[in-house]
Amino acid sequence: MSSLFPALTPTAARADRVALRFGERSLTYGQLHGAAGSLAPRIAGAGRVALWATPTLETAVGAVAALLAGVPVVPLNPRTGERELAHIVADSAPAVVLAGAGDELPAALAKPERVDVPVTGSAGELPPEPAAGAPALIVYTSGTTGPPKGAVLPRRAVTTTLDALQDAWQWSGDDVLVHGLPLFHVHGLVLGVLGPLRRGGELRHLGRFTPQGVARELGSGATMLFGVPTMYHRLAEALDGDAELTKALAGARLLVSGSAALPLPDHERITAATGRRVVERYGMTETLMNTSVRVDGEARPGTVGVPLPGVSLRLVEEDGTEITVHDGETIGEIQVHGDNLFTEYVNRPDATAAAFDGDWFRTGDMAVREADGYVRIVGRKATDLIKSGGYKIGAGEIENVLLDHPAVREAAVTGEPDADLGERVVAWVVAADPQAPPSEEELAGHVAAQLAPHKRPRTVRFLDVLPRNDMGKVMKRALHG
Image 1 (cartoon, rainbow, N blue to C red):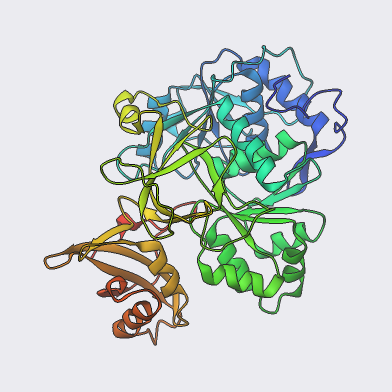
Image 2: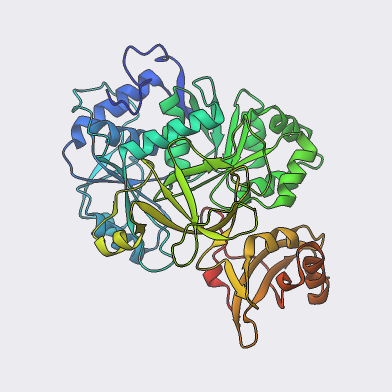
């Protein structure tokens, strides 16, 4: 049986324990072993399989079956547009597509053989465990700078990341994880499905995220919650007057936020109401997890903690020179090295070569590092590093200050060309009361007083809503004057 899932054996002591629960449907470890083990021999040797990744039991079983079969799995977002989906299918060339029996598949998936994922069955004979460097998943990036690229994640990257998080979060088989994340991304699938199964714990997937669902599951035995900032913002807003939700969050062992920075006001509202700190971690499709706040360390809002075991991390200047001073002020690009890294982009040797500086992966994320090793991300190099008047300014710290203003509901910060400054700071704001928005002067003064005058927005633009992707990240490339 695959060493990815030591608890998933017919003789495991946890065979009668629930492994997966999606709404009213659930599978024990024994039942999951039977269902995934019956599918694995049917797809072994398929080359690659695509997975129609709906938030269902079938998606989890399909992913486990492919990994047991030693076949790389390509998770597909069911909401992907026709053109992008056609590119992903042509690029990855799966021989098989796994789907739920009732799923309707688009025309782009007409060529691969369709195999419906069973949720019952008896395990057949499985192939031997592949080498640690063998591909486990091919996950496509969001495609913000061109067509999505398929990042090949080896089996060692999955085990390295999940075992490092076991250490950082004291994650055990007694933990019960609840989340409502999509399953086509590494956050929801690798951390949120494979993580509990590797530990021998339980996953309760909400299907669709709601504060009520979180309160119900955390209030009935779940110990951990994974979410993205949009979800935690909704929880923070729902806490007022909701005693059940407050009690449920207060009783959780671990609250984890990822995929984007959690604004400081939401950190503070949740902590004030529940006494619990939200832990942030930092990862990417190509690297899985790089850093996290540890449960035995200081939960310092605004940081993503320290490098995980087995991960080397450095900050570099634009010319590649390593930044050796850790003063919490000097901004550099994060580069990482370790067994958590992907091996290549499918069919893109040029992009693969460009992504590395020797053995170091260029993340494109800009950060500062504290003297004790804590990392604070200030934004993406391409969209969040603003060079204005000779200063390097991180968009993230300005966004946090804007969000602390009572008249601001949402905020994003970008840079725009300026003849005098090089770039000027532009704030995109959703007002708490659209009928009475704050003035540009008020917001600029608020930022200048909290940070520094050169970091104040020179332009403020008001929107009804910020454009976000499926993971809740603001799509800054869609923001333009």
